[in-house]
Amino acid sequence: MLQSRPGFSTAHWFKSIRSEHSNQCVEVAVVPGQVGVRDTRDRHGPVLSFSNADWRAFLCAAKAGAHDG
Image 1: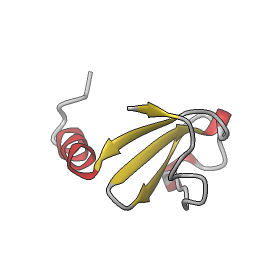
Image 2: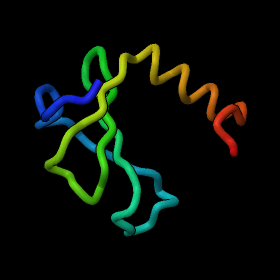
Image 3: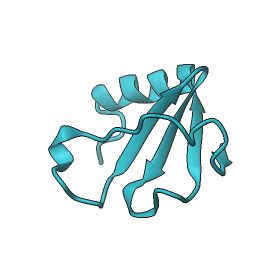
Image 4: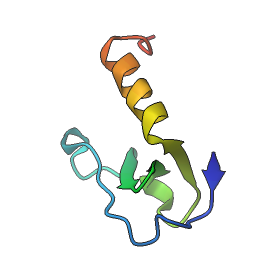
């Protein structure tokens, strides 16, 4: 789901330590019941919001190589 900022305006955002100081990646924030993903190039822009279960399924699939391409 794409949403503006509700629920994530005061969240702690983080990105991979492997991204160094680049602004060409995504950041993730966890708030009760959902996970938000945003573009580091537009930190005031929209947030993709996922349920905890959907985010967990995505991470498991990524670790298993399902999204390699």
